[in-house]
Amino acid sequence: MKLFWKLFCSMVLITALACSAGGYALINAQFHASLDREVAALYEENDLLRFALAQELAFNPMYTRRQLAKAAGGITIITGQGRTVSFRLSDEAGTSLGGSGVLPVEAESLTSHLPAGQRGWVMNALADGRIYLHAASPLALEDGILYLENCREVGELFRTRAEQYQSFFSLMLVLTGAVGVLSLAVAAMLVRPLARLSAAARRMAEGELSQRVRVDGDDEIAQLSADFNVMAHRIQRQVAELKAAQRRQEDFIGSFAHEIKTPLTSIIGYADLLRSRPAGPEQIRESAGYIFGEGRRLEALSRKLLDLIVLERRDFPLRSVPLDGFLRRAAGAMEPTLAQAGIRLSLQAQSVTAPMEPDLMETVCVNLLDNARKAMENGGEVLLEGFAEAGGWCIQVTDQGKGIPQGELERVTEAFYMVDKSRSRAQGGAGLGLALCRRIAELHGGGLEIESEPGRGTRVRVHWKGGDAPCKTGKTGSSPS
Image (cartoon, rainbow, N blue to C red; front, side):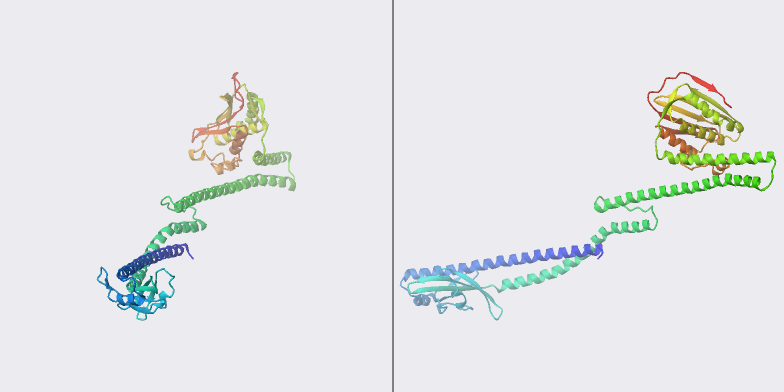
């Protein structure tokens, strides 16, 4: 059964049962209160009769039972409502000895069951539908016990109760119908947020991850709706991140396939040329040069990928290295390549000692200088700097290249991300350099900062922290290229 019908049936059933029980108890309480009043009135009438008979005995104390019964025929009791009270006097066997008026009930049904010296009452229903309260009390005389009996009709009480039951039943039908209509509205109002939640969950299951539900109020259902929105937001964000990771992976596969395909094609072509036909020394030297260059390119790409994997797994011990000598070696490694591209390299480094892993940090410098080379197609100047700063050290590379658009700055340190894919591939890039630099800087307890303006150049700062920063002991300047 659906929750809507459970709520509807529960509200109608609980209301009907509660009202029925309450109405039944109220009607019966009223009936028994009226019946108790009738019994009290019955006993009062019996007491009045006993008083009148006691007065008669006071004047004639020697009366026998039959003499008293005969004398009682002249006694008349009229109530405040103008009703004449009929009574009867009978012996222990229930035989009538006299009285005033006619009682509609037999005496034996009550007098034979009364304990000695006690009074009591019973209810008698006659064949014609009338109902009477029949009371009897004992009178002790010299020749035995005489029972004084009187009656009150209470049929009106039962008829009134039956009418009240009938009216209450009709009222309950109307009330149940009204409660049913109200319960439909309340159940629909309570279930509506759950229906929205269910519909949103189904649409999310179909792929519409932007689904949210309206939050009304602060009850449990509203809290559930708020929790659903939080869950949906997190799922949408995680799915977006997974899609972005998938796109980056696809970009990497395309870049890596391109990087491998181009040098392999050249290597296979020149090797096949050397293998299949005779060649002169110059052609052999040229072919070997191409094979060697493309092989080194593959080696560099493989080393970068391996470095990324290794950096995910381990830390590297740092050792103190003279910063100026370290930067001169890094600049010397890149000097031929930069000179071939028409780029002049300037070096400014302080004569300080910095804690680092020199092989990894050299990878950072080479990558940054190589990125500067790729950004400066028309030549120019690149500045490589190294110095101590407050609480740490910094290596900085500034170029005069094309620059990086502001919208791309936050993504250039992602692995395999390239601002200009066609130019990067043509120049031997795979989008790994800055990602590798960022991870190496993080291993040194530092980070990577990039400032760039399209058309004017880029400045990349690698900074890391160690112990107390060494004092500045001077600055060296050179132009290796």
